[in-house]
Image 1 (tube, rainbow, N blue to C red):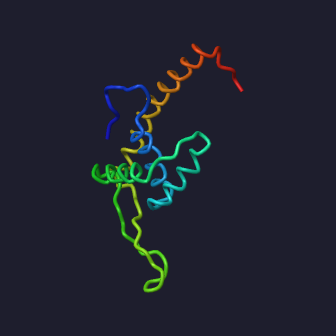
Image 2 (tube, helix red, strand yellow):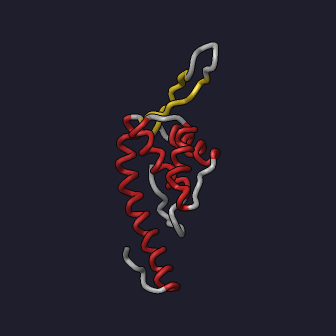
Image 3 (cartoon, helix red, strand yellow):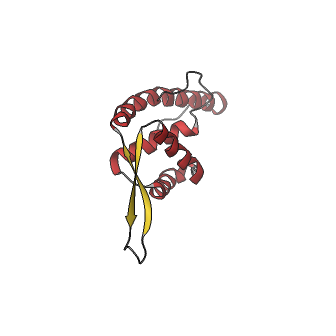
Length: 130
């Protein structure tokens, strides 16, 4: 897995979601709808709510890249109210890629923060420290 060599204005949504989904999978081994709820709660104060389709596109991409593996499980009581869910796990390759990706994304996120701070400073005056 790599980040784009050609940098855009700010980090791409898919790259941002990969970072968070890989972390969530590494820590909790949850399933898709739990990811959606957690991400929505985490980023709601910032006006960002990733869509269902974007989360699943990112999970499918991670699966194709052999970063995560999917495991089907039944939740609830069989024959009564059960449903099949997919639990995501990092593969051995995924654990290595997660560490590398975190380092690459740190560089990219620092660049984006610098760009945004420059825009604020240039148009609204010095940034005030809290």
